[in-house]
Length: 417
Image (cartoon, rainbow, N blue to C red; front, side, top):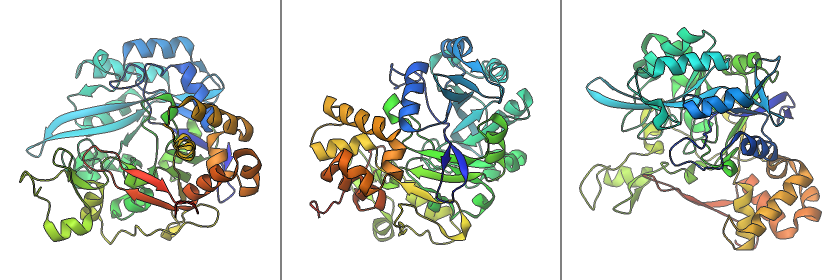
């Protein structure tokens, strides 16, 4: 359990992850490595990920221990049955590709949903299965398995698979989920947007904006997390997601996400809002329409101008207007360490320093979010302390991502200025 900027007790959740059975994911993603890295990151609750895959489902059932709080445990970390599902279907004369997160209250309910989904797709092909169901019908199916089930639109703004995506999405939750739209009470912002950007869309005023890692490898766990108020239990999780119980979120710098701006990767063209206003959304190289990014769609669907010039408080928190939950933007600690050493993030000495710091302070969140300068200096040294504080305070130079290309964030310490 953690205390956020308001002082309220909360638990840290990462509910969008994968197993080694998902396409393009690390073979090291096992229950052992997930629980080990969750502890090192400072995460209290993980989704199991990929429970529809038969081999992973067998591992989950054979190793997770049911707790009296409605959750499961392994290696000192709580788990909730949860998976990402790709819904591909026709609606409104267009092909829709919508990714959603399904959270089930029990492994039995997860098995029931898996059995029903097997009629709509080949579940053994990928831990993140593709089914020929609409997002609305998937939600209906999950609720039929257990009325406590929760469905969350995943990375809501990404062009190809987000509920608001420019390529396969919709202009509203109601258009996507129809009569069941009121039951969608939380939306995942995704790596290319942050909560403040989402708050420009009026229909999201009644929704919790949540952030999770979409981790494809153990080290990527926790790059975005959500702190939820209440008890660490199924009831606490369910109530928080249904009744605006977000205490705070920890965010990627959204510019670093790979769909933040519009562009064409093959043509090397990247357009921000000013470029689009001046030149439109047609690629000047090939003459085809650009892949319209998250900033474009946020601006298109927002009822008012989106404020991207957010002020970071002295404590590292961004506090949006309107009483919405605060959030912090952080760079991954391993990337910060690698930058100060001028080596790659996978270098062994980066791993050794990362382990030393997280062992000393208890977790990556404790280092990156809570440790003061006086705490860091004697342990991390001057250069690394400056870099950690620069990331926390927003002293960065960003090169936005576009059309599947990750952006980059350069920390501005006193030396680099």
